[in-house]
Each structure stands twice: as C-alpha cells, then as structure tokens.
Length: 228
Image (cartoon, rainbow, N blue to C red):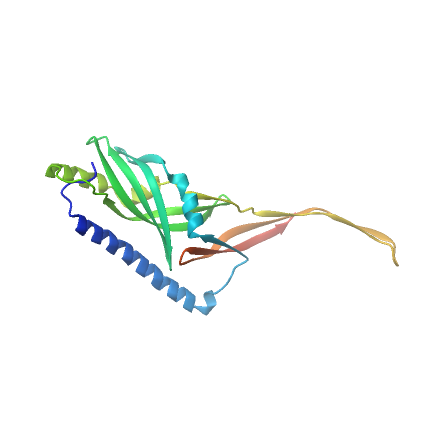
C-alpha cells in the first residue's frame, strides 16, 4: 500500500514547508557564521566535498534494512542528497513493514546531514526531521489510513538511531611517520649525524563545517601532538 485517502496537494505542501523551514534556519546560521570575523579560520587541515561525491557515497545505503521498532522493519530503496547554503538535506525513499498490522507503507524521510569523525573514519549521520507516506494510490478503505498513521507515527528519534551512517573512503590517520636520515659532514669538523625515524601522533577533530551551494568545506583541528 502506498497510502489511503490522503490529500496529495496538502501532503506535498506540508513536506515542502518543513524542508523550507529547515533550509531557512540553516541559511540564517550560515550568514551569522560568515559575518563573524573571529570565526573565520581555516583550521590546521581542510577538506572539501562536492554534492556529487556525497551522493556517490550515499549509494551504500541502497537496500540497507533494519528495525524501526519492535514490530516494524524497513528497507531503503534510494537516497538523494542536496547541498544548499547552510545545510545538506537527504531524502530517503524506504518501505516499512508492520508485522503487527501486516501492512507495507512506502515513506519519504527528510534528514539533515551532519558530519563527524568516528574511529578515524569520516561519516555522515542522517538526522530525520520529517516523515510522510509516499502516496501513489487511492480508493483504499478509510480504516487503512489509520493503520498507515500508526506506522508512520514512529518517533523520529527511533528512526535516527536505526539508520546507518554514510562512510567516506577517506583515511584520517592520527599519526604521521617522519623518516629517519643520516648526514655526513666532511668540511671542518668531520662527523656523522643520525636522525632516527619518528612518529608524530595527534588528535583530530572537526572544527567547522560549512555548507555552500553543492559543496561542503570541512576544517580540522589537531591537538595533543606528541612525538615518539
């Protein structure tokens, strides 16, 4: 089932309003950030990602499945991500199956994309803020719409915990090996100098993430630097 007795125009406007509200708030935050001269800092390291690269990585979510709650499973069909000024928003098309009602519901899930480092791996986490049935069929009995409302009323916090993260094939090492070297001085005082191989270790954290139209700019901060 893809929905029942739902006003398509009303549903479309409600989704559009929810997305526009999130985009507006994020754009306002970006304006404040760009206007704060004290906050303009490239960090110790930087990385840029394009919208195309983000969508290429999001393919790994296709066909992912899991549990939304104790009686509802889900399967992801497709994920698309758009990067705007101030935010990146993912739209996930998925199906949910309720074993309690024995019904399948196609849903669209709108999520904010956030970036973080987990165990030296750069990941994009999806934070749902809107969910709606994907309505493509009509004429079902009104009682069915109540069942569908039960299925899509699952709390967004539960869905957020169930969704897998997007992992990027980027190695964020927390150490750097500095090769050793041998030098020989033949003029004046004749000597040999040996510089042993050393390992520079550090903690890497995300200092700032800026979403600009179709591009993401990430700056990293390095701390607790040590040499072995």
